Image 1: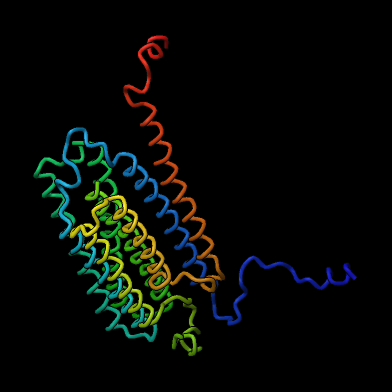
Image 2 (image 1 turned 120 degrees about the vertical axis):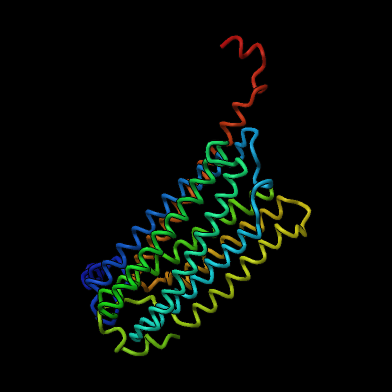
Length: 210
Length: 127
């Protein structure tokens, strides 16, 4: 009896087998691979967050978060990035039925919002450095500039990618490859918003509470 | 729930799940606005006198907001990519937690054990 039931047990599958058989070979593999990259990027940020957590109170007699952070500016930046997340969502929704113009429009809006985010951040950095709160001043400031700067660099790369995709869409339209690229770009953009939640919480808000 | 899942035409050209719907984006956006505004208000207006309590609430809001973004914007669920994105996500979350919490834990103990005055004069002179 036991052996009989054993024989009809099917081979184990390590993932859910999807019922619909649309082509997953190209798009699926790339998207999953890109997801794995994002997860490795999350580990990079984890180590920088850990560094900031350890060095966050090493002021070396220099300025403390309470003295240098301007929360209204951070709130503005948070709002910009959040709105850019939903505008990218609109681009993805326009992409699905193949509306090229609408996709380009929302991508353009997202790129502009991303650019204003980077501009506000650079303004903040310039103001800090002008006040003498440079990365060399203390362990806290080194870790702060590394963490926030790495995120800002990612956003900048995201903007460049959006611009490249705008050109691609203009030249070739919404073919399968471009849809796949936009899907990856979307994950990248939303991922950066998730990282920013960690930044504004652990760096700015908790910094002000210290 | 989503119109794209009902229409096989849209999925017949090699693209994958996970574009989301207007509903998922709007729900995610509304929740995010709320989950961002409250912690900023807590820190800026300071309605709670105890900073430790405020910090705990702010961290709780961040965790919830990260989950909201993951579900509504990144569309991580058990179906996408045969569940592999979810597995990778959970694995990464564990490693991230170990990296950050572990570093803080170790360095906190190192710091407190290295504080001047921890060692008595006799003990340090005998080293």
